[in-house]
Length: 328
Length: 188
Ligand code: SF4
Ligand code: SF4
Image (cartoon, rainbow over all chains, first blue to last red; front, side, top):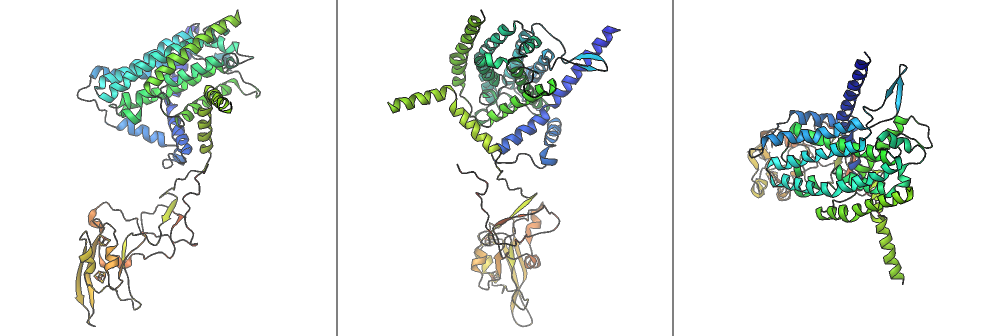
């Protein structure tokens, strides 16, 4: 009996999580277009619903009803596989992410995470790495020069940022003496990690921008020079998969930044509910992502590699060594 | 010495991303400035200046008689060959057009017909909203041309307006004020 309840609870949580993550891109696209508009002294969507609030719904319907086109020369199997490979990993990763300690519902303690893995960080990095295959396969399978160039850039980008990103979190792991995200947040109850690990935060954030393929590192889908990059040939629902995946990863990177460096659900000054604190911090970082997007130009592909190997990697290594010396 | 200091300052600025920071501050500031978008046709409408060449209209004289004497000069000068005039003679022995058609689908709104007219009978007004689903509807006949609104007394301003697809509205403004395109542009 207890097993069934526990199982039902997990299924419920997963379903809720998936529903939230699937719906999240709707307000986020609206927000992004509004922020873009106002930063450029425009208004953004205004016509569908109040201040364009229903625009994402209209776009969603449009995407769902559009023709799902597969180019004649495409590798059909990979072409169909790629959007799924891009969409699934970001959702899977959220299994390991805690949103708070626990809440009591009807006298029962319900934890605000699906599973408390002791190697959560490793799991996240392993799974999120798979997402890149979606991008690479998508570009390759489409058999179009723009798409191939997009995925080529993704390969180069991936190898130059994933290593610094992995190294950047080692400092945090050393401080918390654990790889479990919950323990990491608990370790930050008094002082947030960003105070001890500003360099680690910087490296992680920059690498995170590259991970989420956002400007200034959105080389894989540089609209200006590659059409739409790796998803040039995609249309309809498959294109929507890539878009949803992009937004979920953006949220994921924000969540990771908050958990690893900004104290997760630990609040300061204001005694707000932990979950609200968490949401506010994540929202702030999502905003920062959009803010960056409409401020910075795109880095060139060799510049990204140079940043990854010549700046971020040495910085993250130095960070580990210094953290180690100070801790011992 | 001072140049060296300046150089060092630049390097320190770069190390702490002063340039990126100032860019972020700029866009953040812009986010709270007023947008320059003119919300046509939902909320605002632009009444063009009186020099604007919009839809043609035919004028009447004081007696209410059509001014046009059907000399066909406008049809001659029209570079698009889109005016068709068929004259007739009324009981007083005056020439008037029995048929006057302008194919606005072909018209390039050059205003040459207005310049050529010896009787000051035709002019291009300020109306610019006459799109149509069929190019046939864009051939405007004599009576429609007579009924078209003339030039508004004032022009060149943005007025509150609503999209109105039912009837043709030319919005006249009360105060003759020019539109300052730069009203919301921040000058830094
Ligand atoms: S405006 Fe020019 S093109 Fe149009 S009817 Fe007059 S002369 Fe012809
Ligand atoms: S509109 Fe003017 S130019 Fe044209 S036929 Fe009439 S009088 Fe002649």
